[in-house]
Image 1 (spheres, rainbow, N blue to C red):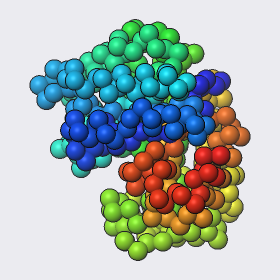
Image 2: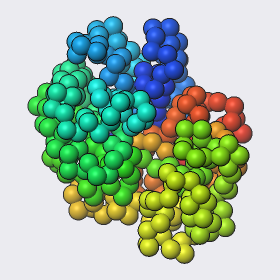
Image 3: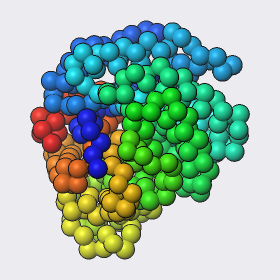
Length: 345
């Protein structure tokens, strides 16, 4: 039960996804071949490549052939340096995890026309890269937000899974759950399972630590500070209660009561997914985890040490968010003093 070739990776966020400017100038300059060489040199074995549909598809549903070479190049550069690639559809027509980026994100789950476009995109990608099954995996869609849409997402994901599998029979297919790819949502993933299926989750727990001072988190004060590990789970919960987006989730589960904040904290967080993996035989993958550049560096070091120990202990592959910029960039100034320790983990 192992996601072979995808043990230790990093996200290329902000390149052809979540772009400040969707322009050729940005695409040509943000990530270059030498970046893949650097990533390999740091000991990573793969990159996760977030892709927004509008880089490769026009508003009328026709494909933009000029967008595909950026994916092509990333795959070729990765191959040149012995890296694997996850192609992650970060935004599809009508849906993105950033619910401010689309008019009505929940509409995607009830609009067959939008779902048909989603399938069309995946048929195009699967056909284009099926010959690279030894190094290219496919992640169907990033972070379904609304937990009430689990059944609808499972139906759409199943349809997409079958479409990809028909064209890429040997490729890994990665599927996440609802509630922002919560680890507690992994048991609710209901898609076809074969020997090349992977269940994914993201981990930014405790959110009030990893996203402290983040301007995009609702009602997050610019001077909000949280230490890690802090004094106790009660300290983390008290801090979380102050931020609406952090007032729910795994840290409030009864199973977390009186738990020390260390690598065992993450093991306990992962339990729902670990039990599902044991039951289904499907490997797990943590597709995003990281700490905002506004958090104290030494606290960040401790957080990474703990989560890495837990991930390694349970054989869960992972991809750090993110390589550069995006408020979490490993190569940016904030990480200068702890970068080596983060990479070593």
